[in-house]
Length: 336
Image (cartoon, rainbow, N blue to C red; front, side, top):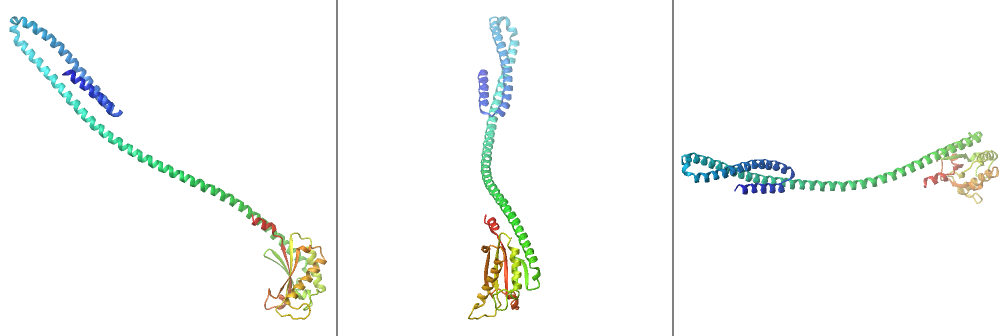
């Protein structure tokens, strides 16, 4: 019976070792070690009891042979036997208690194992949820990184475009400033050349990047005529000589009349023709007395349709020499 109990204890301990997790295994191993130690003590006691029992059996055989002689000691032997029986009863009770403890331990280990398994499953599910969340965040991060890289590339391109535009703007500003300075210098040069005609119906102005030299008709022409008088010719010669060394400059000569209708059977027949012929006369004088390239000068008639003062006909009868700087370089920068 005792050997069977010991075998059950060892078998149960082996099953516990195979079933529980490492942490719980250590606790159970400690309990099993304690049980093993206690069992070893019991085995030692059992062995001692068995040895003692063997000796007693030998004594009983001897006593049986000499029962006659030992009847007087029967009472003492019975007492001793009863003591041994009580000891055996105690051993049986101890074995029963150990068995109960092992059963309780087995039952407790099963419950604990189930609880640990539930905790493990819950932990596994939580880890899976966190892993799924991490994967989702990783995908979102990759998407954000792709968007960021795209935006960064766009930003770099925009930055490059901005730098290019800033460079173009600077070039334009520098060129415009240069043109403005050139036009201003041209205006001052023309104004200085025509300074003697300042109070004789001649003005020099700078507008919209151009220089406008306006000469009233009374300075240049007799009434209704296209022939330039001596004073007007002198003014035009000085103007032409002031312009002949200018590069990248176009000259537009415009003739303007008042609103009074001109009807004649001879030339000029009307205000359109009068304005064109007067402009042509101015161009001829300027070209004949300077080295201006004829390709850079144009004669045009505006008739009465661009008055400077609707209430002053004398001001409307005029020649305007418009000095236009060459803006090809500026247009080239703008068109890039």
